Amino acid sequence: MIDTLATLLLALAAPAQEETPAPPAAIEDERPAPSDGEVRAAVDALRKARATKQPKREEAAIEDAAEVWHADVAREIAKSLGDDAETVRDGAIEALRWMEVPEALEALTKQWRRDRELRNDVVAAPAMLRAIGQHADPRTVDLLADDVFENTSAKAVQARIFALGRARDVESIDALMKMMVKVGDRSRGRRGGGGSGRSPHDANFRVALVVLTGIDLGRDASAWREWWKDHRKKFEVSSERPELPRDVERIWLRYWELADESEPEDGPRR
Image 1 (spheres, rainbow, N blue to C red):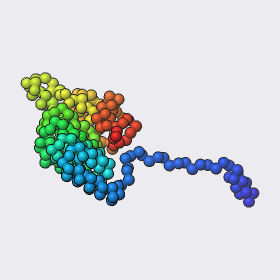
Image 2 (image 1 turned 90 degrees about the horizontal axis):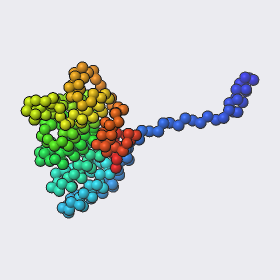
Image 3 (image 1 turned 180 degrees about the vertical axis):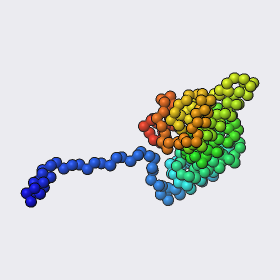
Image 4 (image 1 turned 60 degrees about the horizontal axis):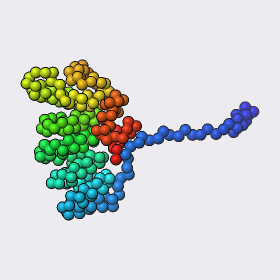
C-alpha cells in the first residue's frame, strides 16, 4: 500500500510529458476537389470563349479553367488542342500538362496519336511530349519511344528522353538504351560511316539515366549499354528520385520547372 501511494505521489509531482506531435504530412499538391458549381462555371466559360472565335478570350478561359482539376474541365480544354490558333493550342497543352486527373493525360496521348501535323511541329511536338512526360506514367513508355525521328528537332528528341526519365520504370531504361543505339547509329550515318557514333543527345541520355538509376556513367553510351547488359535482369527502379549530381539536378529541375531540390518532384514552379 505504501509503495503504491509513493508511486502515485511521484507521478503527480513529475512534470507532464507533452505528447509527441505526429510528423507533418508530405507536401503535395493535394488541392480540394472542386465543387459542382466551380466545374460548371469553368466548362461554361470555356465554351463561351471558344464560341467567340477570339484567341485571347479562349486563352484566358483556359488559363482560369486549368486551376479546376476535374475530368469534365480536362475534356473541355482538350477540345482546344487542335485549335488553329497556336497560342490557344499551346495554352491547352500547358494546362493539361499540370492537371492531375487521368483525363488530362488521356487527352494528350489521344491528340498526339491522331495529329500528325502536331507531331511534326517544331514547337508543339516538344511541348506535347513534355506535357505527357509530366504525368510520369509508365504506360506512356511505348508512345514516347516510338518513331524517335518522326520529329528530328533537338527539343523534340530531348523531350522524349526526359519524359522517359520521369516514368520511373525499368521499361523506361530499356527504351532509353534502344533509343541511344538509334541516335548513335544516326550520328554515325551523318559522318559517312566513320566516327564513334557520339550524338548531341548523349548529355540528355546521361541526365535521364542518372535520374532513373542513381548511378552516373557520364556521356559514354557504350558504358551505359554494357552496364545495362549486366544489370537488366535484376535491376529495380526506385519509386523515389535518387540524390543527383549537382549539374544533373540543375538541368532536371530547370527543365521540369521545379523550384528547388527541396520541392516535391511533382510540384510545379507556378
